Image (tube, rainbow, N blue to C red; front, side):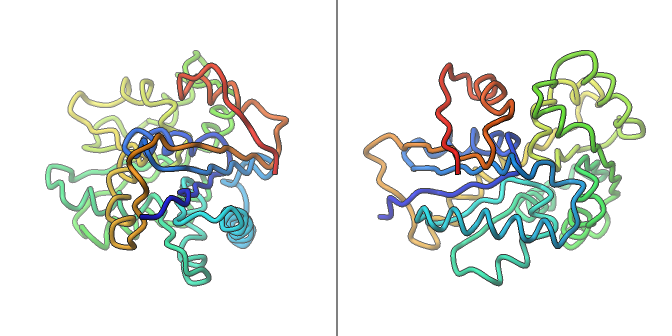
Length: 261
């Protein structure tokens, strides 16, 4: 039994879409969440910058004695995960590989749309991982640089959000599955759904990660005590942001306690 917390890392509020799914599946686990709001957004930064920022995030979480780390950020996963996995002994997972495995097992998915930050699309991380498992997949990449900043501002269900998503979805209406390749994007799920054919699947990577995490905890003997409710601590690198307002709405909580790091 290991009651140390699960560590989670994102550039801002988007990773809470992953946290929400993990918390629902693991109500007894302790969780520490780090939002690097001081350095947001990641999607426009160089690969070297993203690697360094990710290392700083991991170092902070390790200083909090976490037992495993979830990189709940598409950009950091696509450009830094392989590097940091070779630098640290702690189990570290990102959002891409488990999602690619999920799609590989669903043979009704033949055409996949990927919406993500410019940095993630530029890295080609999603396409590389998907084609490794299913070389026959038809993949359509679409950078959506405005959505993460809009999510941080809480602009996820207004007319501006609808018009922006509509513009980005040009040519993606008939995909079998749409991967929300940035963890901010599930905040726009209802709008994305309006743009897709009825039987298209919207893939929230938070759900995939939550379903994948039991194997990581179990194989490393990291499962925590199930007799008490887990605690959550949220740390931000900059508190002068709209994080709390968006988090309250997403998590349906009136009070969100934030720590400055």
